[in-house]
Image (cartoon, rainbow over the protein chains, first blue to last red):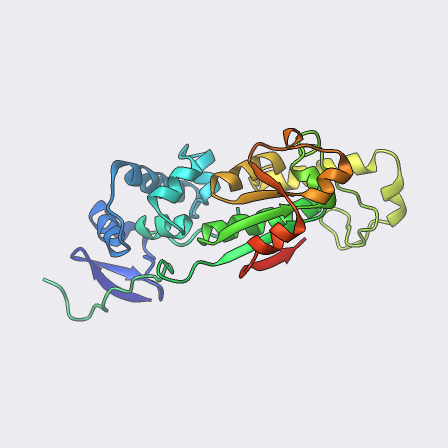
Length: 104
Length: 177
């Protein structure tokens, strides 16, 4: 596990660059993570990220795409537009959370 | 402002520039337990950014036939991996043939799947379709079973013959279930 600087915040990350400490994340860090993977955060992006953060706090694991859609109320199609190609991993990365473990 | 001890930021490789991966699934079974493998793998493939086609043939037609897609069943018969719940003790094969056992086994399996928040087949197919999967029905099976496109889930692109399937799966990884 390494410490790196993102948006002037020192944060812990794993080998791939995913953050590993829930509390080191804030919106400034989230926006910087997004821009590193070519995503400009909009209100819709924040809605997804905030749901993921809240849900993680309750459940202790990162929500899958299905959960974001059924519990978070954000349609699957939209997730593929907001976080193209690999939405599950990308939205977890921006939210400072581990990759989702669930299969569906 | 920045400290010298911190490592440079590592950005995950999401493979955005990688060549598009293409995976085709063939669904040939209409048993409840055999419907799920392709659906789950297709879901994984789509969320990994792959292009996905699913070809339904023979008994797999029951997965897209609106008259049957919510009535798929699971039988214990012929499945020697059936155990008593929470135990490694096998259930005798003969029990699977008793009246009502298929209904019971189906109910149990559906519950276990639902407990994991995995959707039933119709909703699963709609979800995959929303994610961009293309669904195809097999011409020979349609003719054999006397079906038309009206009998099928609206998300099915078309009825195609095997040559068209071979053509569209060119360069793809093909997984037969």
